Image (cartoon, one colour):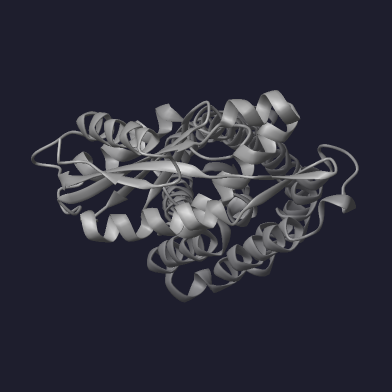
Length: 364
């Protein structure tokens, strides 16, 4: 076996792996859903399999290395069932178009390699105590269907096959381990980035959106989508006598009150609505598509739900009420910031008029 050719095959594999990692990084960032991500990555793996197929390293005796094993073995791990299916169709179809019925054995090897990757990916994490255990298992088992398909094709003498098989498995194994580790790290980095981004947009106590996230979501819903409803309403909510609760029962009870109110508000709104803790004891709710009459109904539901809520404070129970201000209008006539200002003015009118009530504001 020519070590120079093996080196060429290995370096080609590393080059293709680098391109796969770069494209994979772009794909997982572009996709807004897991299904679309798997679809995109499956297409990416399919393109790579065809590219490697058209650029093989020939060892002589009918043996060639084209680097498909890594993407075949890892397809289910990184693109799920939909991506694996796409890869099988693309890689197998390309081979059949190129060689016809003589490629049947290799197509079966493609399917077998993907299935090996599927079986190992489905194994529970507790089965692998070492970081590289899963990738090493893939590396040692995944190349063999492709090796055996060459031998069964009848064009390779047994002596040549035996001389080639182990180096072929070794070079593919290295590719599988490297690609698995690098793609896993890229996926973990992206997951960490998403988690940090989510945490930055969420109030840690109530788990509602914070002020920054509220404005971003409101902008996306009301201004970013042409097809979104033109009408909308905003509710400003403030806890009545919240300072007394903190001074009398302590901040821990005050935190429990905030959590209880956040839960009460969340149970009264629609899936399309946006609720956020705006700071301190203030909450805000955006009601896309709502007019004043429907907004008032939701506001009263929230007020009553909070009024019926009680929070334990040692041997005592704290009763809670809120005041609400509502503004409703059209996104063509007022901005979210203007709506918030009008709703805030209505909220303070509710405070002046005795609290535990809803006040309506004119459109901003």
